[in-house]
Image 1 (cartoon, rainbow, N blue to C red):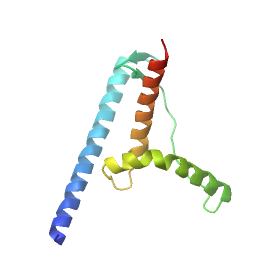
Image 2 (image 1 turned 60 degrees about the horizontal axis):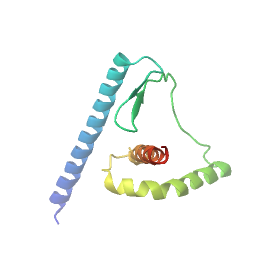
Image 3 (image 1 turned 30 degrees about the vertical axis):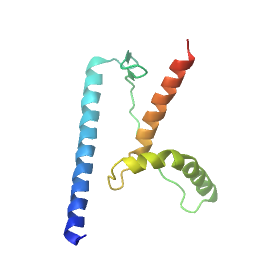
Image 4 (image 1 turned 90 degrees about the vertical axis):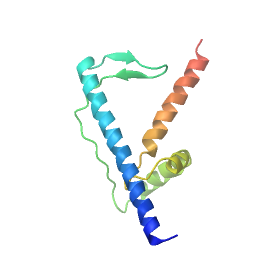
Length: 125
């Protein structure tokens, strides 16, 4: 394997990741515009099977942080990592790397939601 082929593969991987990110952002903006135009706040529409669409009003801002050398913070974060990592590992193996952006939690939540809806659908008469 030559250095040129490794660099070419790296550039190709970044190009694919950029295209995926651009497609996700475009789909996000298009669906937001469609929902804003079609639904009032709080209105719900059934989509496909267990999926439904709800318009919510979210004017807040989200950010994260932790106290750098706090023992209780470290214990909580270690627990969350230990619990979530077995679920996220298969998704991280499948999804492309997008630099510091990790889409595996989003995909895992969507899959868990779908599986939950399917199970509820099977249980309810």
